[in-house]
Amino acid sequence: VVSGPLADFAVDRRVLLITGVALCIGALSAGVAWCLVQLIGLVTNLVFYHRFSDALVSPAANEHPWWLILGAPVAGGLVIGLMARYGSDQVRGHGMPETIEVILTGSSRVEPKVAVLKPISAAISIGTGGPFGAEGPIVMTGGAMGSVVAQFLHLTADERKILLASGAAGGIAATFNAPLASILLAVELLLFEFRPRSLVPVAGSVAVATVTRLFIMGGAPIFPVAARMAEVHWQIDVLAVAVGIAGAAVAIGATHLVYWAEGAFPRLPIHWMWWPAIGGLIIGVGGLIEPRALGVGYNVIDALLTGHAGLSLIVGILVVKTAIWALSLGSGTSGGVFAPVFMIGSALGAFLGHWFPHVFPGFWAMLGLAAVVCGIMRAPLAAIMFTLELTRAWPAMLPVIIATITAYVISVLVLARSVLTEKIARSGMHLTRDYTTDPLEAFLVGEVVRPGPSPTPAGASISSQATLRHAANVFAESDGRPLRVISPDGCDQGHLLMKDLLTARLHDLNEDTERTRHLTPYFPRPPQSAVRRWASARRNGRAS
Image (tube, rainbow, N blue to C red; front, side, top):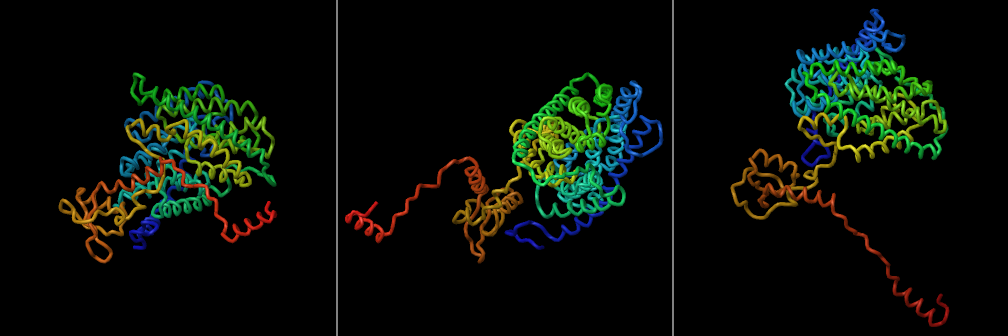
C-alpha cells in the first residue's frame, strides 16, 4: 500500500494490475472501432451502391431513386426494432446514456451479447442513411468489452467501472485519433471522479488504442485545418463570444427537440419495436430534402472545416441535419451523437463566418463545432480538446476556449439536464455533474470528538486522526452506533455520534451560502516620532 488514511490519494498497487488489463482492452477497443467503421462502409455500399466494398462512402456521393432514399432508413429501423426486441433492448439509443445507466444502476455489468449486437445495429442504422456517428456505439461496445473482461476476472464494481470506461475511451480515441479528448470525456461523462486509480488505467487504454490505430487506420488528423496565422486579434476573441452564444442557442434548441421526441414516441399507440422505423421515415424525408445530411458525413464535416462548403450545404445541414438527428434519436434507433453534433456545430460556425472577418479557412466552423458540442454534451474540456485534436489547429486555442465556455455557461443556466442525462432522469434516477471536494475528507475526527464515554455501547473504535469520511464508513459497518475515539498515544479521547458528521456538511453549506465581509478599512497609525515632527513643523508654519 502506498497511501495512508491522510495521503493525497487513496490508491494501492492494485492499480498496476488494473492498468495492465486496461492496456489489453485498449488494443481490443481499437480493433472494434476499425471493424465498426468497415461494417458501416459495407452496409452503405450494399444498400446504396449495390456493391461489396467496405470503403466508407457517403450515401449522397451519387444520385439515388427517391424510393431508396426514403425506404432504406425505414428498413434499417425495422431491423433495429427487431434486434432490440428479440436480442437486447440495450442496442437502442446512442450509447452514452445507456453506458452511464449501466454504471449507475447495473454495477458496470454489461451482457456479452451487447458487445456483438450494438455495433451490428449501429452499422445497419448508419449504413441505411441514419444521420448518426459510430462513436456512441463504440462507447457502448468498448465499454461492454471492458465490463465482460472485468466480470471474467471477478473484479469489484469500481474496477469494472474503470475497465468499462477504459474500453469506451479507447474506442473513442481510436475512432477520432484524439487521445486527450477521449481521456477527458471519460472523466467528465463516465467515471464521475478524477482519481489515480481510474485515470491511470484509462490513460493507458487510450494510449494503446491510439498507437494501435496508427497501424490499422493511420495517424493523420481526421479533419486537418491549415491554421496559418501569426496571432489572433482581440476583436476575434470578442466575436468568439458571439459564436458561443449562437452555439448555445442551437444546442438548447436541438436538446429541446430531442426531449420532445423522446416524450412523443411513448405516446404512440404502437409497440416501441416500431419506433425506429418511424424515425427512419423522418430520416428518409430529410434525405429527400438534403441528401448530404444522411450517414456519418465525415466528408461534409471536412468540407465545412476547410472552407469548401457552399451556403446551400451549410443551411441544409444546419436545418435538416438538426431536425432528422434530433427527431430520429428520440425514436430509440441506434447511433452516436458526436459526428452529427460536429457537423451541426461546424455548419453554424461556417454560416456565421460569412459575416465575420476572415481568419483562415474553417476558423469559424471550428468555433461553432466546439460551442455546439459543449452546449449539448456539457463537457467543456473534452469539447475544447476534440476540436483542437481533430483539426490540429492549435493557434486557435484561445478563441475555441472562449466560444466553448460561453456556450457552456449559457447551457447550464438554461437547461437542467443534457441530451445524455435527460434519458436517465426520465427513468427515475438523478445524476449530478458537480465534482467537488468531499467535506468529510476535510475534517478529522479529533476536531468534532465529544468528551467522555458514549451514552450507549460503542460499535467500534476509531483514531482521532482519521477523517470523517473514514468515520462514515465505520458507522456504516457498525449500524450507526457511537464510535470510541482513540488518541494517537492509545488513550480514550471521547466518543463520536453519527450526527457529528453533519459538522462538515454544515461548514460546507455555510461556505456555499453565507455572504460576509471580512475585509475592514485599515488606516495604519504613523509612528509617534513622525507625529511629533509633523506637529513641530506645523507650529513653525512649514507643514502642508
